[in-house]
Image (cartoon, rainbow, N blue to C red; front, top):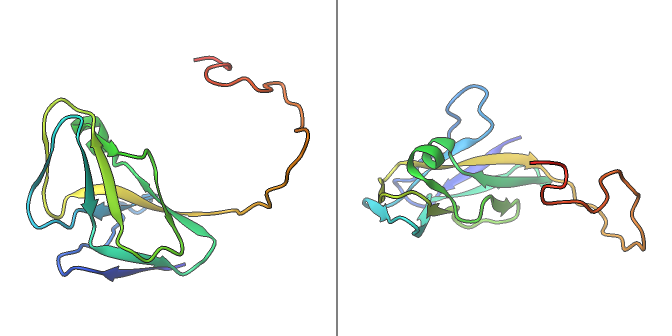
Length: 145
């Protein structure tokens, strides 16, 4: 499959895989100057690109970059971003700062990962009962911590 990428701004950087077996392609900040995210703060960072997968049955997911999360406290504000295959607008990354010191985002910084995954669209069917399992309705630590 192909992922078609349209640059919306001249300084936009194409998504890129950083190793031969990387699952996600890094997305870069397309900003004019440095942006500071204060502890507890949130920011919406533009990437300057729009994308279109060549296959219709995929979802594009945005994931945090582990180095940013562990070392600098930056992660996605919504946990995991979903970009539907029919969206044609600019990819923007919502970040939240969970660390203790301000973080500076520079133009071109890698800010998130873009994954392309197959998607299944089930027929939603109402039922009066679900098959029984050993776990049943247990959740939130019911199988141990």
